[in-house]
Figure 1 (tube, one colour):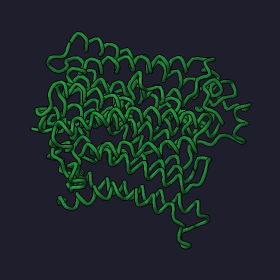
Figure 2: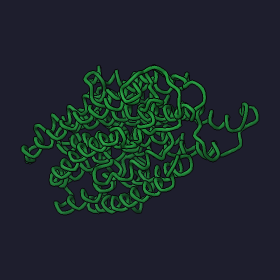
Figure 3: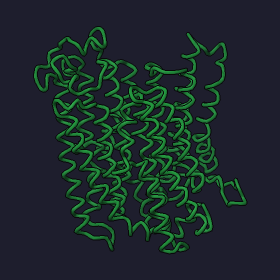
Figure 4: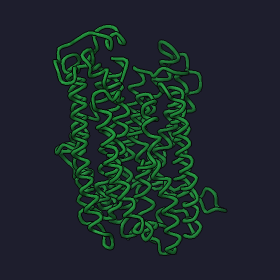
Length: 532
């Protein structure tokens, strides 16, 4: 496919959701209203996100897979000459998988919402916010100018705030405020770091700065820049102990909000580490790498222990909150891989990014479906004698929940395995100059985290799928069923359509990891050696 065609494809992928958001707020033409204006605008959301997914697939198909380290589909236009800020877009083997993942998850969320719109204000506003969120996320992975990166990074905050605050559940306003305050404070610090790099480096162009590999930045400048930029990225990642906004946001968010928050927004922080911090300020990254690895290892253990506590009988643990804390542990593996500063570790981090998006996105869909059917996501209620007992009452739903759980715990042959394994391999032999005994300790802690993950995930499957805290799986009736009158439905057709791609890609990535690693490895090798 020609460069011009790819160039227009990438530009359309970023701009189309914005145009779709504006169109969603306009009155629907009479011939397209269907049964109601609400149905029309929800169908509009499915159409626009489907078109973006189709364009992303075409971009991936036309991408030169023989040269994944080279920036492709590039657009470079002067925007603010006085500040040397340019509209610079492009994709390589690092950003392309994240671009496609974003388009896929947003389309599946729009499709799910067409049939199961969360309760709240006008669907027009919901669809418009969903599309603005998609545009900002796609732009984050596509832009190659530091100031544009910051604008795209911030663009997603407002729509996610309103999705949580207006369409969320109990405690939504507090959760939305915590989300916006944490991320905004982190972003202010990150902006100072980005400005420092751009001013001292003489350009805001990320490709030029990566090629220089920090040669125009003093060691002190790099240290300050990594500390500032890293703090903002760590909040979004989220890295322990800057993670405390995440469980509340996930618990209060509607199902599609949780899917996008876990599947896409968390990846923006770790992507920034790989795209900006490692190649542009290598000396600063090397200095702070052991601290990043230490925080990552603590996060892995902490997230797993909290999940174990939430999963125990009598803890009144919320299943959505448990999955949210599991994200803290899983993203710890991503940060550990990045901290090794090795191609093996960074490739593992990027693979774990995609795997986490697929698996945790599926888990939040499933938890949302369980809550819709039983009126609660409280584990004690779901596992009581009158609880879910999914194997007996909704066996397909129970089977999918068990699949998501074993994928999340890193079973070999599924996507969750490769990223965590490669991150630990990277820690086994970190980059030159890093303390190997320290990283071996971090690797051991990460290995312990995998065992703890298996423990709490299996406890969740036993309690929710078997019911009666592991007792009979026969269908029962009782207080929880009364929250959703009638027999609980098994997987519905629209749920099957929304979840099947995630299941299939989880299996495909687990059985054929080379498809993804073949894209990321050449690009990672080039980033780590300064674009040469």
